[in-house]
Amino acid sequence: MGKREPQQNGNILRFKANVIVGYEKDKQVRSSGQLLVALRLDSLKPIQLKYGDEIIISAKYTEIEPPYNPAEFDFKAWLSHQNIYHQAFIDQAHLIKTNNNIGNPVIKYALILREKQVKKYRNLIKSNEAFAVASTLILGYRADLTKETLSSYTKTGTIHALSVSGAHVAIIYVVLDFMLMFLNRNRSLKIVKLILICTLIWSYALLTGLSPSVVRSAIMISILITAKVLSKNTNSYNILAFSAFCQLLYDPFLIWDVGFQLSYLAVFGLVYLQPKIYNLLYIKHKWTDKLWSFIAMSLAAQIVTFPLSIYYFHQFPLYFLFGNLFITIPLVLMMYLGIAVLVPWFSFLAPVFEWIINFTNSVLKWIADLPYATFSSIWINLPEFILLSFALGLFIYGLSNFNKRFIFSSLLIFAGYQVLVAYDDLAAFHQQKIIFFSLRKNYAAAFITGKESILVTDLKITDKNYDFFVKPALTQLQINNISFINLKKDTVLKNFVLRNHQLVFHHYKLLVADERLNYKKMSGNGVFSSLWISGNTKFKLERLAPEIKYKNLIIDATNKDYKIEILKKTAENNHLDFHILKKNKAYLVQLTQ
Image (cartoon, rainbow, N blue to C red; front, side, top):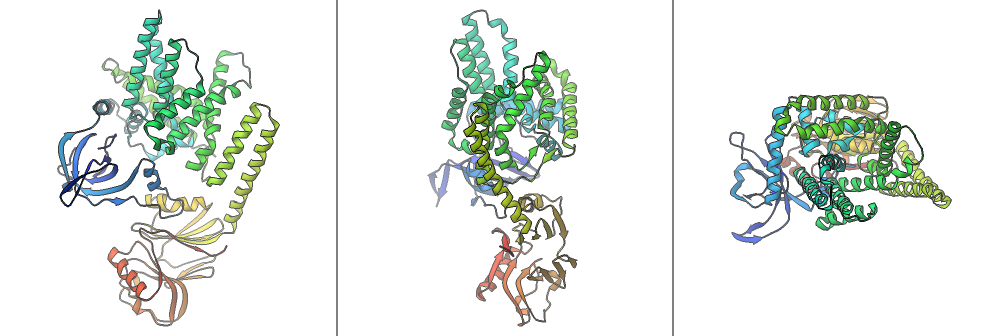
């Protein structure tokens, strides 16, 4: 078993397994690597698996599938950055638990302890959503947060508060430093205080899963307080670089981790940019000055991470400043109360803790629902990301050092970025194309003219498959008007006609054969660009009149696997081009260049 607890969703248990031994022709072979396992549990007697359990599985593992549709999330690349390339889907009957536990005893103890604390939260907190937020925020336990809550935190730029990060560790350090003030009397007691704080901070980091941002913060705080006790000078950039070096030395694949990248960028922004923004204004009033300090911190972190955020997440929270200023106090209170209620004597504070979580969620939801709360569907490619990053970096450095050359260079690079963006926008305005999406059990084809699309599909807008496989491509192509059409319903729209099993879009002609043609013949004549086979139809290609011609065959995922194989062989025997829209790349028809 991997370094985390198995994650259960319904009757499917998913976990990462470290492979130690394999079998070839009854011969044991020492192996290494990781495997992603999806286990279907027995509904009557589900097996209990924990971190470190040694198991034997009988399974045929397969390679992680690549993305098949434009702009689809690249799950294969994401797992490869964790050194995982294969997966296995098994039933519980194909798994044997050896009753040996070969996990790291320290990690095992931390996970058991966290499980106990999560159970305490479950007993003390009534609201499921408040429980999920508490478990995620305090303990780093991946609870099932609703889409609405996740959206609220994302749209307000406060998603960092939901994951245990450096800010959480810093809050704990402030508490520990205050509680252990009595040890500041002499050097020996200061060393004792140093050991206690470092031990407790690293224990908390271990308890919450050792995420990159937590480890980074733990390393930096450990070095800073050690230097303080030993009366040594420190350099924030060196400490930041050293912490990154330590993590990459342990796991080089972290360099590709989005959390790792954003965490170090944000801290670099705080170290380099925050003082410069703060010094722009001199404020005498104490509390106004503190408010300005918080604003400077939020601006610094957001500015530095801005290009990477829109490159990965394609959106920018407009009210991030408002959201971060609001959540500062509730976050501190939630951290203090969340830890306090785990202590038996303070469990009576649970209702207050729950109320603060619910209040915070409701306010963030209100902010997220404000007009223009977020700019979404911002898609930039790699060259545009590089140009934007360079332009921003040079501009900040030029302003900080009053260097006209750097400022002028940044403006030139930004102009180049704008040219690329304008070109993309112009291309989107003039585009005419068809995308036949590769799905698992459904069909979907987008007929695109400019920034409008007619989507012929049996999916609904609320369907997860639409969100995951279809929507990303349409948002990347800047589509802002989508008409949902079912293949079985005759429809006439601008540049689009679907009638009598024929679909015409501009000059592209499709002949549709679905279950409505079961055991029927199709007569007449005509020349079509493609023949679209759908609905696992019993219609046979031999039943087409000889006068009906088509250039290629499109076979969607509504057809059963055996049917797809039959159609594939028929197409090969007749030397026809064919496109199978199941476990293959989507089929793109470019009507204009």
